[in-house]
Length: 313
Image (cartoon, rainbow, N blue to C red; front, side, top):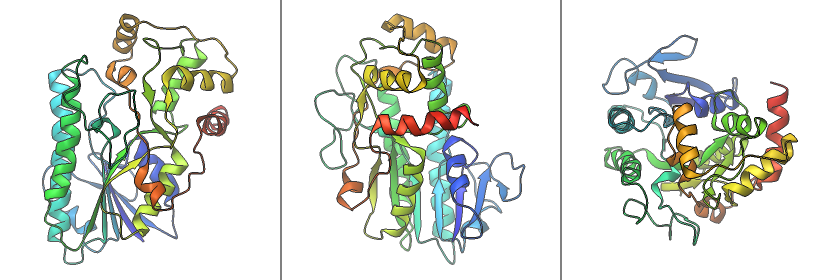
C-alpha cells in the first residue's frame, strides 16, 4: 500500500510513519523542508511536482497545519486557518486531477469543533458544534471556525472516485518529545499537574497505537464516509486525568492552578489557555458502532503503558 502523508513531520505524522513501515507499506511524506529519503517538498498551497506522488497512491492522509501550541495572536490564528484550509484545498485538487486517484483521503480535523460542555458527551450524531457558547472567550469561536472550514475544504473537493473521511481527533498521546503527553507529564513531574481552574473541564484523548489502529480501520471500512471522532471512549475531567498521570509517574501531589495562574503558565510555555480550559467531552460513536475495539480505552491503562516508554526513550 502506498500512503502519502502531507504534513507528516509533526507529532502525529511521526506516529503514523513509525507504524506504516516497509515492506508492507511505501510511505511518502510531503513537507516544506524535505531532509530524508521518502520526503518530497511542497508548500501546502499550490500544485507542484509533489502531486505525482498522489497519482497512483492508495491512501492520502493530510495532517498539514500550523501547530496549535502557540499564543493565539491574530497572526497565529490566521496562519492556523490558512495552513489548514489551503492544504486541504490543494490536496483535493491533486486528488481530483489524478489519473489513478487514491481510494481514500483521510483529512485531519479536530475534536475542538465541538462545544465547550460538561453536561453530555459529543458524538458525531448528537454532538453540539461549538462557536456560540455563552461565558467563554470570544476568540474560542475562531478555533471552531477553523475546524469547520478545514472540513468544508475537504467536502467541497471534486473527488468522485475517492472516499473522504474527516478525522475529528482528540489529543494523541505518544511518548515523543515535544508532544502533548510529554508536556503534561513534565507538568506532573514538576509537581505542577494539579487541577486547573477547578479541573472539571473534560480532556479527550487517544493512545498513539489506537490512533494508528483507527486510521488502518478507516482505510479498510469502505462504508465510513464523513466525520469520525478519533477519541478514547472515556474522556476524563482534567483533575482526574492528571491525578492518574501523577500516580503512574509516582508524584502523588500536584499544585492546583487558578485561571490567572494558568494564563501565566500558558504565556511561559508560549501556548494558550484554550488548550487547558476548554471542556472537550468527545466520544467515538461511529468507530464503536462500526466494531472498532480500543486496545487502550481507559486512561489508567493508557498512562501505565506510555510512562515506561518515556522512561526508556
